[in-house]
Length: 162
Image (cartoon, rainbow, N blue to C red):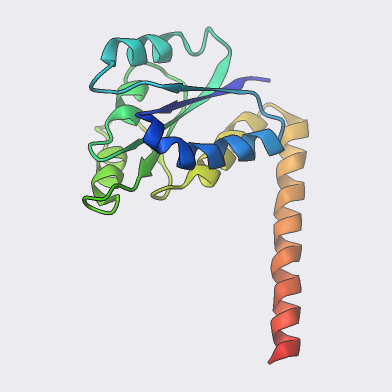
């Protein structure tokens, strides 16, 4: 199975990235996590992205806040799918990171999840890998069924209560 590469702009993004890691672990999806900055370590982030496919990665998640150019910088250096997680900052509540991540120029796509959307970034990467991994696709269907049952159970509980 291909690995998921996870790149965060700084260690302050780890609480969001940890949610992605936990989700990947729950599906037994291999991953590597790194800290690279689009601005402070541009050569290292470009080298990671350029070599990612040869190093066994199938998709890359990039998490960054504020001027969140990391996902775009990664995407510019690979043809692998890149999923951006805009991380909330104290300044503009994550809107700056969201816009920086989602507003990519034509030709360099970045799939973008919600601000602080670590779980959905992991699930989207799992969906991408599951295209060629039937066992992983089965695990995704099982999770969806379990999630549906949990909601229906809560519906029954609230109906009985009200």
